[in-house]
Amino acid sequence: MSPVGHGSGADSTMTGTGSSRLPFFLAIALGLLLVYSAGLLAPQVHAQTTTNQTKISINPTSISGLNYVTGSTITFEVNVTNAPSINSFATSVEYNPKVLQAVAIDYTSSSSYVLGQSASAYIECIDGVSPIGGACTPLDDIGVVTLYATTVGTATKAPTSGPLFNVTFNVVSQGFSDIHFLVAQVVGCNSSGICGQPVTSLSSDGYFSSVDCFRLFLPSALLPFIPQSFMLESPLASTLLRARPLILEQR
Image (cartoon, rainbow, N blue to C red; front, top):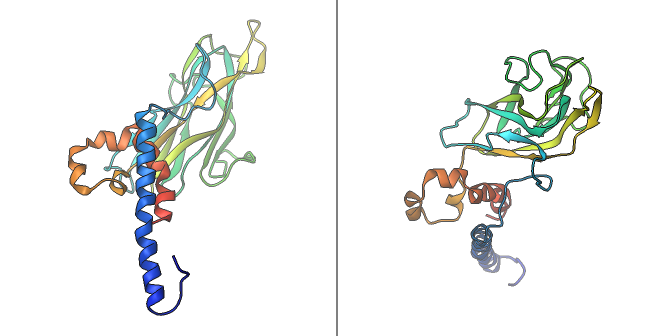
């Protein structure tokens, strides 16, 4: 293709550029479909899974639907599974501030929380600001929620499983947001009640979506035949959504 010039030559070049992007879209769509069909897509888990390993995860894994319009409220829970006896935890979770706004962290309102209702936070930050006063971590910024909490003089009984805390978000625009762990750590206690040993664990992310990206790839005539739950909640859907910014740059 010749360089962009003046007059009719420039118009011809611009037309060619637009048409040449079609193979780019098709290549991305085909590649993602092949990966999905080969069974290579998996949830974003940040360590190798072993039997009975401690796991810190977002629950539910996904919240999605076209009905989550601006002004809607959603809540994600942070859970721990198969932990030993613990007395504290440290977490930082990243989200997309263009789509969601964290408004509250709750870790004491229910006796179902792992550390109970007597837990106290020594670091609590939303978007780089601490609602309890004090310093935030170097990771804290717009789009990050951090909670470090502990109990004094008590510890859970092993094995420990259940909710650590939950975070409530307002939907500020339609779109996609990973709910991604930057830090996920619990602190264990031995049989003598001595605590302070970090527990090796894996973490598993979640996501929020109020859009579907199949419309970027498929002819509109096919869309009525694809279940909305698949377009919003399947592993392929989440992969398409994560690829969406790159795709839109090329349009």
